[in-house]
Amino acid sequence: MNMSRSRKRTSISGITNASSEKQDKRLYNRRFRRACKIHLKIFGADGQFPVLREHSNVWAMDKDGKKWFDPEKFPEMMRK
Image (cartoon, rainbow, N blue to C red):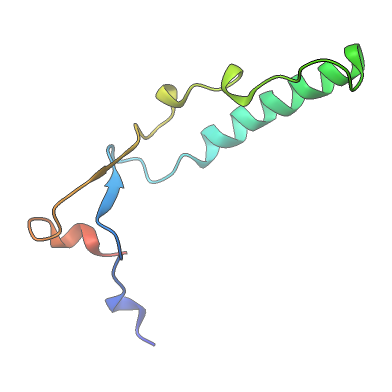
């Protein structure tokens, strides 16, 4: 198997040059788990738990989403 010739199957890519949102996801999930732990200590299993979107902001992450591109125009973006 020759990995130097591997190609993407779908022509979709992140909008910015950031390679990953891993650190942002870790931060937001830590905040969310902490809020759930506090909720459990205060209310027990009763009541409505927090929602992840209350503790995260997808617009503040490194990448601003994904966008389709034309693989005919940008063949270099189809490389892995």
